[in-house]
Length: 177
Image 1: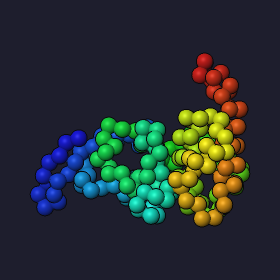
Image 2: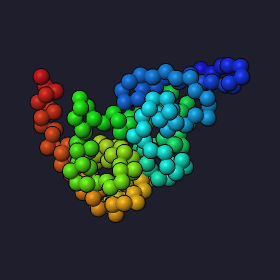
Image 3: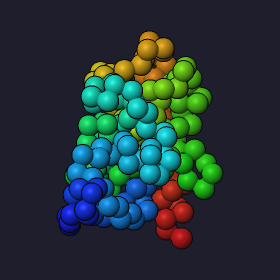
Image 4: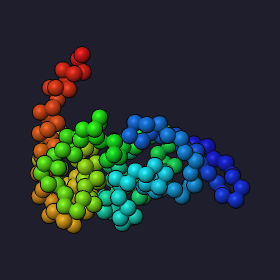
């Protein structure tokens, strides 16, 4: 990360990082938060601006695989790191298993918390491919949902684990080619 003075605009930092696997270089003000960079500069509106204090989970992204409230992460802290967003979960026009599971099980109503829930679920299933309900509840407790009562979200996480587990042999065969 480099900094310089740019006259009337003040200090700017240059950061290099990746968003959904795509390398980025940005010049930012030191007080820029990751959520604003994603939404305002890149038009990536999947992460939602809600509480802006890091407590609701609507803006959850993965930074080097770890769920993070992007509204409370200074953008300069992602220098040299990988950021994953809900927009990067689909591939080749196909929803990820987690996204498919949320659609199948109705793990959303208004949809505001859904991007954060999808990112939490993605991180959870990478760490624990077969979580029990207590583990699922613990993980999703950092994301506030005002609509579903959480049962459909828990069902969605279980279904995502099934889809991923059922998909693994096909992936192994494809990787061997």
